[in-house]
Image 1 (tube, rainbow, N blue to C red):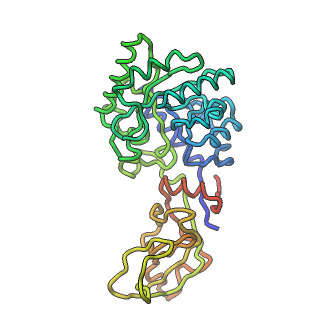
Image 2 (image 1 turned 180 degrees about the vertical axis):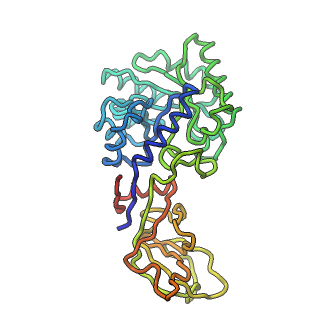
Length: 362
């Protein structure tokens, strides 16, 4: 079975470094934990660190994961990071202290349920700023806000926006100014302060120093905290650690084979392959014990330069190891050895979601 190695200390180092970037600007932030798929042991280890306990909140898109966080430490504040479905309203009130919302009917249902559970539920209203995913349209915002801010068991604590997730719309300074102006409009219209503008995510971190308005004061960050990269470029951000997660898979077959398949070629039943080379050469090919059901091989970067992906199917993947021989003609890698990879954010998320991946926690 392939294995994902998780170094929680490196994750904590990233959290502390992000804190150092945001604190001078008086920005609070939510650690988005959906990457972890509610993994009990990882959460138990992470949630014991002071750096996590002092965060604004922990956010997730799965209520079962928020439930687990509350079971580990009920004192931590939790944020449900997508608009709730009506059928999930009771669980949202039970496990999420805060939720992001875009629907009047849902907010009214949350209000009724919060009254039943004797709670005040906090809400951030999400606005549409061009990403065309979730968000209240700007022209409807005043009417929307007017119908929600006086509900008995709902407290509107902020407005926010989601950018970069679907179409990759960049959170530019202009977008952040637009969000800031909506806050000023609401406060002037209703003479009521709004505490947060939740306008930032991992993709917005590079703008913090000079390019965002001062009243953007809440971020929701996952990728940069866990894998140290910026989603816009896919590259390492500043001095963050990019090696908190390592993946290794086992070689279950090693043979010297042709580079061109033999027979009439049609569409593969399950799988993806690289382009077939015109010339037929023989190289060593390793079959590894993971496939599409475990992770997308395109999201894995081999730790060694001479290893390249040939193709992947549902439960096995093939890699070209080239010459794979030492000077005295012995195999460098053979059956029983493993190949190491650097997984992307999405690769880690898929691996932790799979019940076929062994997880080793440091």
